[in-house]
Image (cartoon, rainbow, N blue to C red; front, side):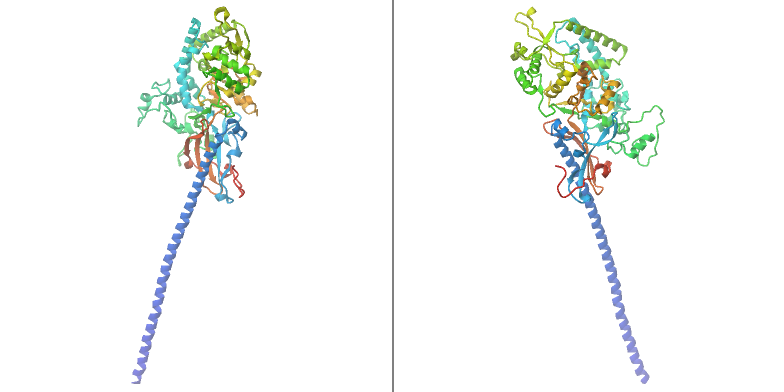
Length: 632
């Protein structure tokens, strides 16, 4: 009994202990469960936090890129504003060539924190003293410093047609046998020699071949007749896969030349793989090692096995070519030029006196419209260019030119044997009836130099013919220095708002200079030396400085006038928008024209896929304060 009584409590204690143990185990399991739940929630929170951080970083980077893009586009609009000023005003603001104050590190987003400070810089390829592309500068690329392909094709077509042959001898409708024969000879020279005028100009580009030059012109001209080395649809493009037709007209970008037979990316862009206008270190290394440009990532470098193969030009042909060069037909201070071929002579005279401030000059110009003979040999400029090209042609072409020169010289001798001229005075205008209008048209403003004017004949004609007056504008160097800047600045022979396609001889590379007919290597070398001598003479604002300084005769100057200029109002801008403290950037290429009433963007494309192109130190650091933006 006692043992039984003692066992019962022990069992009770065991059950109590077991229940207590079970009660103690249950909270521990829940704790583990809670810890697992908390860990999962923490991981979810961490993942969400990381996701938010990534989203924030993505948003920050996207915002930075957007801000950089807006900085670049702000640069394009600033350039539009800059080109709204006259040429003289632009020069006073530092010009377009190398102007860091206007084109380097211009602040758009003012912030003390460099990570949030946004600028833009305008970069352009530079030229060394020899006229070769070398390095970079802060400025704009004058499209008039390049070959305008569309104008070149039109020039070649015009010269080939022989339409200007009638004026080859400078005859004004005399109709004698000698004049007719001279015109016929000029027509023959023109129709043969100038078939290659545009080709010869293109051949000056480094690495160019006759086959590619003719193929380019065939691709652009309107006809379907292939040039001697060219290609039209039936000759080539119909055989490629898939076949396509040549443009036979305007194209929209230089890159379309890749459709021309023989044109490759290596020829068009050279070693400038990121298209920033100068060779970076790795690009220069490829050039120096003779490697082929444009290798795909991972491709093995190879060198050409052809010992006669010419390497592509360092920057390709793209920097030498354009589709948009143009000059506004106004004076350097923005005044609309006077068309001296205007029909209303009385109004013309009043306008000339007002602008030129010289009655003697104004009266002679008006009198010329009624009885003028141009100075020099009187040849059409394009015919003279044809003659220059003919000097390098085959023997029979040279024989034709000899005959043409002989007849031109004979005509000059006859003119010299004519009545003696007397100096022009403004009083002589009283003998001219301005109400009858003008019967003589100016081919160019330089027709006034060494020109003559015949006074109207008396009522009975014959012996009562009036005297011949000598021009107050002579080709003596001192006279040219005094008169041509005024004449070239304020006068024109057309009503057009702009003049397209001429080549800026002050900014173009030396290869383009050497391609201009009439400029031999010696003259080109002299021009290159003159361009870097630091002269800021007023005469150098106009292409006639070549004659004033003795590099060309007046007749040679008249001949190349349709091809050359010292101006230009259409510019290419490579604009890099960037945030100073991080990698956000945007690079755009725009062609902006100031040749119209209002500046407009002719061409626009983004180049972000090719990278920023320049490091931040090169683009420029703009230490900005809260005082306000640096750009006005």
